[in-house]
Structure formats: C-alpha cells, structure tokens
Length: 430
Ligand code: SF4
Image 1 (cartoon, rainbow, N blue to C red):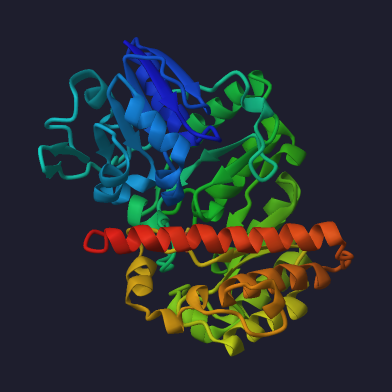
Image 2: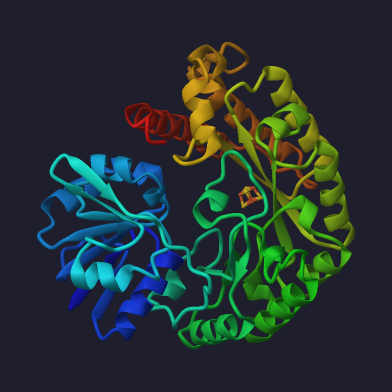
C-alpha cells in the first residue's frame, strides 16, 4: 500500500515513529511537511488545536480522494476534529498499537478510534502501550535541515508526567505513570540520526529527568542516558530543555552541564503563588527561584517560560511575575498567553470564566492603550520587553524587536480567541 503521512509545517516525532512501523509492514511510506495527495491512504498528524482552523488543511482534507486518518494530540477531542475536518477517522490514543490495523482494514473495531456513522460518532476504548520501545522511525532525508527551537529533532525517551498542570496535555494524553524506553532503543535511534547527518537532538517528554522513573527518580539512568547520547552527538549537539524545578538536584544539574549544551528551560509560569496554585503547578515561587539559583550555581544557563492572561489573573499577580523576572535574571524568556487546550482542566476553567474576569477579553486601558490590545496581549507584550531588560546582559529594545514582540502578542491573542471559539462550539465534549 502507498501511504502518505503529512505532518504540516514540522516533522513530528510521532509521525516518524508511525512511518517506521508502516514501513516495516511492507508499505511504501512517504512523510511530508507539505499537504499533498499521494497515496492510497493519508495520515494527517496534527499537534495544535489551531491547525483544525487552518484553511489550507481544511481545503486539503475536503478534496482528498483516499481515506484520511487524523492523529496526534488533537485526537483527545475527536468530536472537535470530526466536526471541523472532513477526515475518515481520528486516533484518540497513542498510534503505534493501532496504526497498522487502521490503515489496512479501516476504523471499524480498532481500539482508540472515533469515526462517523451517519449522524453518529462511534468511539472505541483507547489502548495504552505498556512498552514504548519501537522500531526505527522513518526519518525523512531532509530532517537535518529542520530547526525546532534550535534542534533538528526532538526525540522521546519516556511518556507521561507526574505533574498535573491545568494547562498541559501531557498527563491527560500520556497519563501520570512514567513509561520509559530502554537505553539501547534510544541509543540505536540516535546513532541512526547521526548517520543520516542529523546533528542537533533534543530530548522531549515534559521533564527530561523523569527518564527511568519507577516510584522515584532514577538519576543514574538519566545521567547514563546523557553520557551515551553525548558520546554519539557531542555535548554541543544535545539538549534536554524542559525540566520541572522540583525534579533537579546537584547531580542532575552537573550532568546537564557536563553532557549537554548546558541550558535548561523551567516552566516558571508565574511569579504569583495564587496563580501557581490555580494552575496546579505543585511548586511555589520560592521553589522556582531556588531552582534557578541552583542551576546557575552549576554553570547551567536558565530560560523560563511564563503564562499570562490565565483566566482570573489580576494585575497584581502579573506585577508579581514582573518582580520575579527581575529577581531571577533569566538568560532567556518565553511568554505565552494561556491556551485552553481541549481535554485539559484549563479548558473547563476557560469556559466557566465570565469574559469580564478573563484578561483575553478585556480591553487594556493602561500604558499601552494606544496600541488597542486586550489585557492579555498587553501583559504578554510587556512581559516580553521586561524579559529582555532583566537578562544578565540586558538587550537594547530596537524598533524591530519592539514590533516583533508586539506582533507576537497580537497574534497569540487572536489565535487563542479562535481556540475559545472552538471550545464554545464543542463545549459539551471538551
Ligand atoms: S510539569 Fe510540564 S509536562 Fe508535567 S504536567 Fe506540568 S507542564 Fe505538563
């Protein structure tokens, strides 16, 4: 069978894993970032709710001749996917265990799949993989040209997260039990990536140090993994960006300094304990600042990601976050307006918050009022500018940088209002 896997815009790791499974079944498989009709079956891998509204994707699936099966994190709300895209079925769970049956025999009777039958949507119980080692993924030949936050590819070492952050899909899609790949399986994959000319590899999975976790952190497993991968790629080409502040210690940070590019990104989210509690981060502002200081004491550079415009966030909460940034002096900062991803607790919170209490729907009347922004957009913009000023070596805000951040804040606000539109439309399912 000729199978076209489409991963719009970026080669996702999941699409490459599915490609490898289907290749080993004897199918002729091609992976593309472009929307193209070329195959007896099309698999569409989507990672963002907004992709459901992308006019090019909508037109593509409506005109596709062969069956189109959609997978990826958007599958957590199949009613939304089937309502927005003219696809033949949606995978609601991890795809490895079901992809061959789905492609070869259609959706009927396949676990973890939803599809339409007349007016009705048929759903079957999702399947959870116990072992997540997998066959060699199908790596596209131009993977070495891709750059996602500086890496050619993000590989998966484990699934699940112990955390329960309200805005995050990881524990909802993969669960809160940690399942890790074997080191041999990961090493074999990284060797193959290297052979193909891929240089820069990042480890994904929410919190890298959870690799090997069984009732407790297995620091030896994590450090051994870094040692092995660094030996193949060189430390300058390995990163383990995302980490929880309560899952690092001296040994872990020392290994990050020794075997990787020496950067970490903590999900700080807010400088207000009230907001951290609402987000169910499970840590406090003090935990955050201590982790930043500990990392720095080991010579590790620290970036932080922040969420603004969370439903119910007050001006005071926001100002506490600005104060935190001054104290922490982070080397890099990412700011996002809170996105209520379907399937997360934040989606319900967003639906139940009156617009007057939601900064995304309130007009900003402060220092940036001439720019006609929502309060969430204004906070996002101000925080990005502030992040530059708070770096150890502050960066001058040129007109170009100012406009880049302004456009970014506006664009985030517009996108997330569209996500709210979808949530409202499918409110009984999210
Ligand atoms: S710690 Fe990170 S991966 Fe885990 S639930 Fe929170 S945001 Fe998600």
